[in-house]
Amino acid sequence: MTEDAGAIYRAPVGTHDVLAPESTRWIEVVRRFADRAERFGYGLVITPLFEHAEVFERVGASTDVVRKEMYELTDRGGRRLALRPEGTAPVVRAYVQHHPTPPWKAWYVAPNFRYERPQKGRYRQHWQLGAEVLGIDDPDVDVEVIAFAHGFYVDLGLRQVRLRINSMGAPSDRAVYIDVLRKYLLDHGASLGEEFLTRAEQHPLRVLDAKKEEWQDVIERAPQLTEYLGDAARVHFERVQEGLEALAIPHELSPRLVRGFDYYTSTTFEFASDALDAAQDAVGGGGRYDQLAEEMGGKPTPGIGFGIGIERVLITCEAEGVTVGGDGPALDAFVIDNGLGEASTLLVAALREAGLRADRAYGGRSVKAQWKLADRSRAAYGVMLGADELARDAVAVKDLATSTQIEIPREQVAGWLLARREERSK
RNA sequence: GUGGCCGUAGCUCAGUUGGCUAGAGCGCCGGGUUGUGGUCCCGGAGGUCGGGGGUUCGAAACCCCUCGGUCACCCCA
Image 1: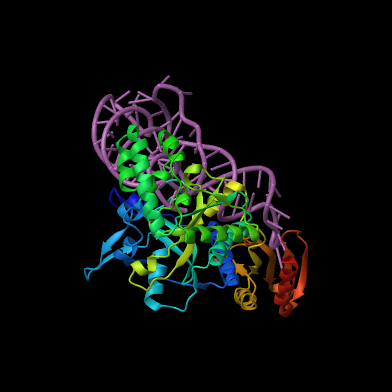
Image 2 (image 1 turned 135 degrees about the horizontal axis):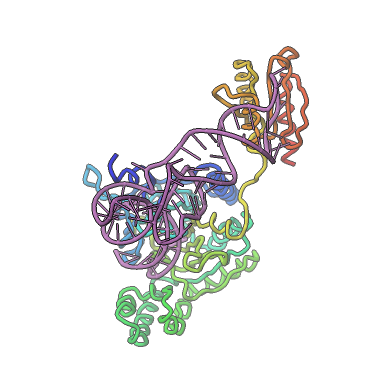
């Protein structure tokens, strides 16, 4: 063992192992999202964990994610690859490659990788749930996509998640605006220091979401993007808002909402939780990216989608006191063997094959110890088989919550336990 | 990349101005008479005090380095 052993044999910085029972919350969140995707008519898309680095470079040269947070590698064939730092680019790449019939509605659950200093709600590997629709620019799709995400939070029981929306306009609108904004910032921020001026010059939009106190005055008085929308973008944005209102989805206009990727056009939105500290309060976000497919060498294809951070969702649930997944019995039965061995092994096997969740102890533990394990396992029933029961071709079944115990013919146990489970789920 | 705080049993933590075989609660294992858990009682296992170096008669405590955790900034999910 070297002195580094303590650092080597542990999850790398910014990554975490998720074990049960914590992991059961994860699978539940994913399951809810998958159900919802199915109800909305989205199909699962699975893309590689890594792509050619260029795929991600298309998401924008001014984004930090691309500039300094990508995990890049060169494979043995000399290819420049990168671990996925965000979910949309690979999906668009898959669309361009396979040209499925539009509108193509796809959802995904996948880890993203960003090389940054970890802190609460921010990790080097984090998981995102997401959905994308390619091939149609109907504002109704924007509304549907937003409703999909919004409903997901509501389903989970979250009440403090707020929706903010904005429009980035058409690329031409945005180009005009960026020039206006840059000029404004340079004119009014001369006293704010070099960092401000550099950013205003190079990435004026990035100034809008800066958190620096000293900058806020200038930022608040800045011209707003929505004032520079062309007719098409303005009408589109109005229809999105009307759609949200029709579905009674609360939302607030957020003229300074600029998302982290350069590819956004038109509608952009973000879900933030009041239960989280402002620094990392975004629990999901997305928007339209009508140029991205074309930038990847495909035909001009509009698209819109969102990503939701699973870790942040779970943190939010915790902050709001919302429990994900039930805390009912984890097992239907825990089988206790009293000196028989094989007969008990067969019983567990039979219960499992019958569709019941059943477990047992190993290593020849005492009967007392086995009952203790049955209790710890959060099983609904302890099912004991010993010489006495075997003689009567029965098993002893004890309700671990009420401590009442009865005897049931061996061949009826599975059916009986299934019936009890049925009752519990009502 | 920059900065603050922290690092003692599986977990949460105590360890007084450096000084007795390093403790507690929870958890884990066993027992409380022969086949029954969750309460209670008794007992037990488990720690190179993150790692390395230094100061000292003596360090878990002090100093340096290093690794790790955590939080914040930048920015994002």
